[in-house]
Image: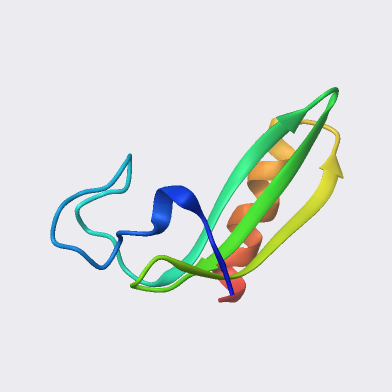
Length: 77
Protein backbone atom coordinates (compact mmCIF):
# COMPACT_ATOMS: atom_id res chain seq x y z
CA UNK A 1 0.00 0.00 0.00
CA UNK A 2 1.30 3.46 -0.89
CA UNK A 3 0.72 6.30 1.56
CA UNK A 4 1.46 9.88 0.69
CA UNK A 5 3.38 11.80 3.34
CA UNK A 6 0.79 14.55 3.45
CA UNK A 7 -2.09 12.08 3.90
CA UNK A 8 -0.84 9.91 6.75
CA UNK A 9 -2.93 11.55 9.49
CA UNK A 10 -6.23 12.00 7.64
CA UNK A 11 -8.14 9.84 10.11
CA UNK A 12 -7.22 12.14 12.99
CA UNK A 13 -9.57 14.90 14.13
CA UNK A 14 -7.13 17.71 13.29
CA UNK A 15 -6.71 19.19 9.83
CA UNK A 16 -3.55 18.08 8.08
CA UNK A 17 -1.87 20.14 5.37
CA UNK A 18 -4.32 21.75 3.01
CA UNK A 19 -7.09 19.17 3.26
CA UNK A 20 -10.58 20.57 3.81
CA UNK A 21 -12.44 20.01 7.08
CA UNK A 22 -15.14 18.22 5.08
CA UNK A 23 -12.66 15.51 4.00
CA UNK A 24 -14.25 12.24 2.95
CA UNK A 25 -13.27 9.15 1.01
CA UNK A 26 -13.69 9.73 -2.71
CA UNK A 27 -11.88 10.26 -5.98
CA UNK A 28 -9.89 13.47 -6.04
CA UNK A 29 -8.96 15.06 -9.36
CA UNK A 30 -6.91 18.01 -10.45
CA UNK A 31 -5.42 19.54 -13.56
CA UNK A 32 -1.64 19.56 -13.79
CA UNK A 33 0.54 21.58 -16.18
CA UNK A 34 3.79 19.88 -17.17
CA UNK A 35 5.93 21.50 -19.83
CA UNK A 36 3.64 22.58 -22.64
CA UNK A 37 0.90 20.04 -21.91
CA UNK A 38 -2.00 19.66 -19.49
CA UNK A 39 -2.86 16.44 -17.64
CA UNK A 40 -5.61 15.22 -15.31
CA UNK A 41 -4.39 13.58 -12.10
CA UNK A 42 -6.89 11.32 -10.30
CA UNK A 43 -6.47 9.53 -6.98
CA UNK A 44 -8.82 7.40 -4.90
CA UNK A 45 -8.15 8.26 -1.28
CA UNK A 46 -9.92 6.60 1.63
CA UNK A 47 -10.92 8.14 4.96
CA UNK A 48 -7.61 7.09 6.52
CA UNK A 49 -5.68 8.91 3.80
CA UNK A 50 -4.53 5.75 2.03
CA UNK A 51 -4.17 6.10 -1.71
CA UNK A 52 -5.83 3.24 -3.54
CA UNK A 53 -4.90 4.31 -7.04
CA UNK A 54 -3.36 7.19 -8.96
CA UNK A 55 -3.96 7.86 -12.62
CA UNK A 56 -2.49 10.40 -15.04
CA UNK A 57 -4.59 11.08 -18.15
CA UNK A 58 -3.58 13.22 -21.08
CA UNK A 59 -1.91 15.11 -22.46
CA UNK A 60 -4.54 17.72 -23.34
CA UNK A 61 -3.85 20.70 -25.58
CA UNK A 62 -5.02 23.31 -23.08
CA UNK A 63 -6.37 23.84 -19.56
CA UNK A 64 -9.99 24.06 -20.72
CA UNK A 65 -9.89 20.62 -22.36
CA UNK A 66 -8.30 19.09 -19.28
CA UNK A 67 -11.01 20.66 -17.08
CA UNK A 68 -13.67 19.35 -19.47
CA UNK A 69 -12.26 15.83 -19.03
CA UNK A 70 -12.56 16.20 -15.24
CA UNK A 71 -16.19 17.34 -15.56
CA UNK A 72 -16.99 14.48 -17.94
CA UNK A 73 -15.57 11.97 -15.46
CA UNK A 74 -17.62 13.48 -12.62
CA UNK A 75 -20.81 13.25 -14.68
CA UNK A 76 -20.14 9.56 -15.41
CA UNK A 77 -19.54 8.73 -11.74
